[in-house]
Image (cartoon, rainbow, N blue to C red; front, side, top):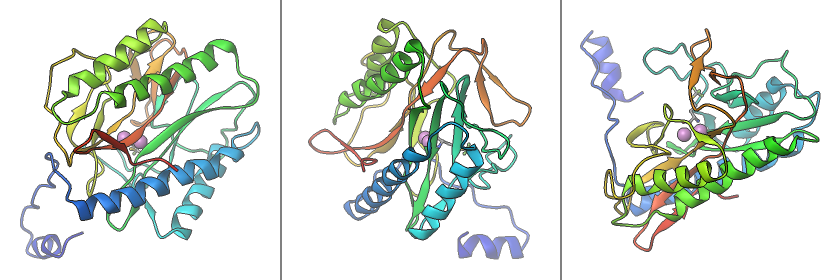
Length: 274
Ligand code: MF3
Ligand code: CO
Ligand code: CO
């Protein structure tokens, strides 16, 4: 917390609102985003071999927490409490099968052969957030599930390929939606990508569906996530009573991939590569 905020708490004054508006990052800030982005991707690489039947989502969480601290980072998700949500209790999100996103690690929840699991990590290093996720296959996975996971990753890459100065936010969503629907899957509407940097979630919102040529014009220095969720059945969602876990309304499978990307003079840079 900033010094100024502490003073206003002491004086019992209203808190200044956190700035969640759109920001353009300087070259210095971009270098910090590159470092935390690489760290986030390396964390997923580190966890990948643990993704095996009988491993609990809590075990994945605890290893991720240990690894982040050993690398001088902290988790952005632990204690995260945007309006309308209780503080998140995980250092990562673990979302299995029909869980779309924001699954909470739990010692009683063990991976099973045939599951798909999204692991979403957001370390904070030197004040900057790196946000990335992948969906992993547990053991032998059915063909449709594997196709869903492959299509989700490919749709994310199609979306990212649209990014360059002058392109529109809507171009990203249109490319993702075209690919997803041509593959026979639906695109989640209610969860979007977001600006990221010093803050975890800022403008712009990045829908994973939409119309080409619509929305905000991209400019060098913008940093945001592209994080499509594709569903086997309906794109409609339900929230569990814990106010975090998001599942598909029809309980069919959902997969997600996420990169943090920067708009550059030349086009796009993926910041969350190992
Ligand atoms: N990492 C998620 C995203 O991609 C947000 C997780 S917030 C949490 O935006 F509280 F659920 F962890
Ligand atoms: Co994100
Ligand atoms: Co994320």
